[in-house]
Length: 110
Image (cartoon, rainbow, N blue to C red; front, side):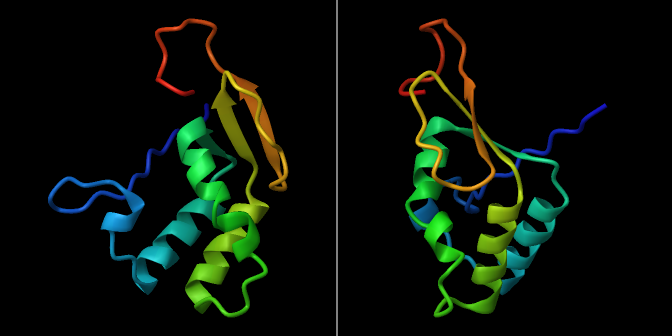
């Protein structure tokens, strides 16, 4: 049976926007180890769109800190599943689109 691990960055004050967090080397190492231990990463559409703004190109970012580059490479290596009702541009390697639920009661913008 598969295991599902939910990981979200949240500050002590409850904020979870990526710009509200201070990410250090220890966090990058934790995220890299967690990513490399996964059989796949499961994204909702909005989170996937945020990741697409940085991570696919970061794998070639030799100017980035070593731990950030390692995480970018882990993301690139690990299969990614994107659940969405809308078409998904599959330009990030190892990415597949999974059709979201037909119901209109799902998350907004999925």
